[in-house]
Length: 71
Image (cartoon, rainbow, N blue to C red; front, side):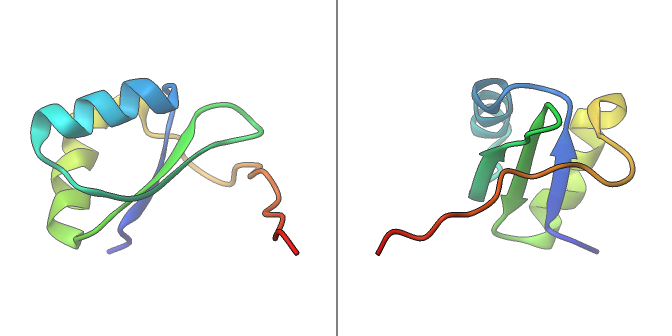
């Protein structure tokens, strides 16, 4: 199962809930289509957080903000 998920909540809300539950975040970003994409360091954390976020999970494709490298 994937360690990444898209959540219908702000980045701050997602980070706060993950901190409270002890789930370590590997990467987090705002989504252009609304919500937050979060990647966890372990599959176990992702599985646990899927249950926590429940109906806040965004099903299907989302629009991500393009990554821009600094030169």
